[in-house]
Length: 135
Image 1 (tube, rainbow, N blue to C red):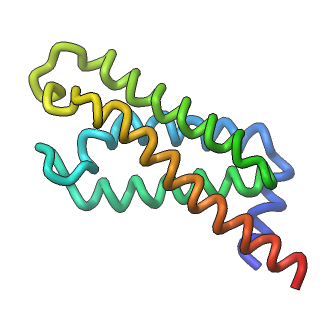
Image 2: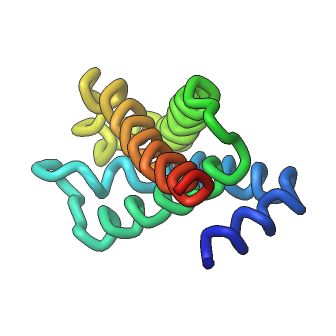
């Protein structure tokens, strides 16, 4: 019931929800990448939970906006999360606290991890939506 109402609201205001999802993805990718990687300085479980919840909301919006368009979801998630991290690094360039996070594996792996999480949640939501349509 909630999913159908949410999808209907997203379909009514597609542009608003698309802008909201893009801003959430850019903002959270930029803010959270220094807090959600276990083992690095600054790790916080609260930010890990908050980031996962935010990416779940983004995947829910994407599932209501784009039905069966996995390539578009992968591309948008990867580009927007990379943009958020890039803006954060540009803002804090030269600070000592960011030096630990300037590893190639972090810079390439975190946007890929975000994309993987969003695509997995998106796929589960689409499968659930098609099962409800075709019992």
